Image 1 (cartoon, rainbow, N blue to C red):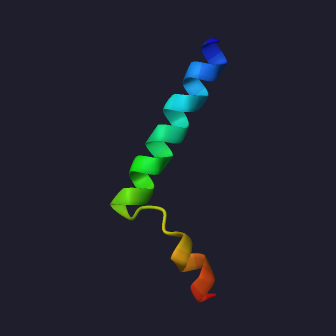
Image 2 (image 1 turned 180 degrees about the vertical axis):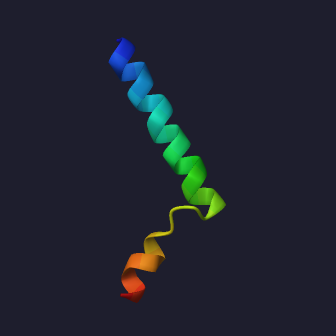
Length: 31
């Protein structure tokens, strides 16, 4: 349960970073 909660928190952070533009999947398509 501890690991599961941490994983969800990390994934949520990644989604927030993606919305902020820190992680843009479109950058990979440019290459």
